[in-house]
Length: 302
Image (cartoon, rainbow, N blue to C red; front, side, top):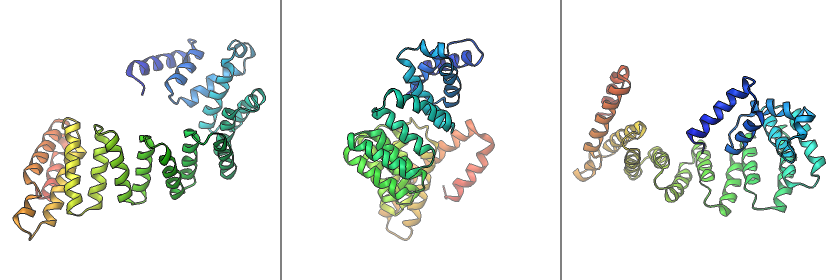
């Protein structure tokens, strides 16, 4: 994650380079170090170095690193001709390199040559079955082709080996949600909460999935996770406050005509606290929308 100091340094150097103040190589190195995407600028300024024999030769071994960086930036910008030229230079210099092989597969993918890219990635995986980047590229290709089922299959196989990859669990959860496979999505968020219990984002996402599934048991559990989101954010999650109000209203509807114990599950005190917190927040941050909020809360019978 990029710190504020690093972001400030990057922006200052970027402005300097764009205004002709020099520091192009330092800028490209910093972009690479921070792993940020500035593809258009990397392509523009990287090519200015590569197309100048004097500047290029002054880089020494870093010349090849720049070719790789510019090739990836060019693919990002759909400048596939520039990317191909960079990759050809690298192929000539490193004919047996697996790293260059990845670039070749990426280029096939950028061109939409899915079958050829799939074959290229499969060959690379034969040499190194634990290459996480290639596994993730196969997931990305499945998504790009509109094949979520294939993406799910790739992610499940990947997670059998790399079970601690939080980004993969989250990606899988989001695909399940997009397909309305909420129980499977809930399982993914449970894994994420177990591994990172202090991240409010996962508590909130899990609560929303449970609320969507519905049923009294799930609604009560959803309310708990909305409450834990509020606790973890210091009361600053407006979405979670709304969630508690919605859960309370839904539980009350399901409890109509039942005994007092079931009705108490609606926890009207908690709903009231959430509604009060929402009204306070809207008064401070969006007073023009306070009437709209009041109307929404009344519709929930709060």
